Length: 183
Image (cartoon, rainbow, N blue to C red; front, side):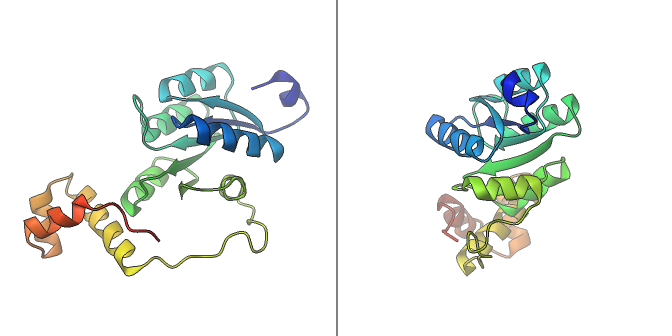
């Protein structure tokens, strides 16, 4: 995080994502919105950056090689409990969102999320009028999220999950092989 921007009072933000294109585009957009942005491509790198200079805000990808987003979240909260951490992921489910918020995340956004949504989630300020509407998930998406939550509750045990859901194990396995449905 640049010392010049920090002296000028710009809020500091650490952006952690292994997708270089997404990371750099989002970093540029957040800089345009007044943040002093530092980036990291992996969890271990992010933790090292935070130990040198604890950020006010952090946006962390959930799935990365090495330390995952939850591990980075916990490490950032140890370095500075006041850091407001937002989890960003392309693999969103209710179970992972609940887990992240239980561990101290201020929010959880599914990719693709634009910079205005990220700023709104981090600061608690509403997104500009007309920018984002509440989207009702499709029935297929709601079913997928429910299956993921029950699967997480069963520690990944497919047989136990199928029993709890009242499904045949093979039917559940077929559903699990599919990608998450679009909203």
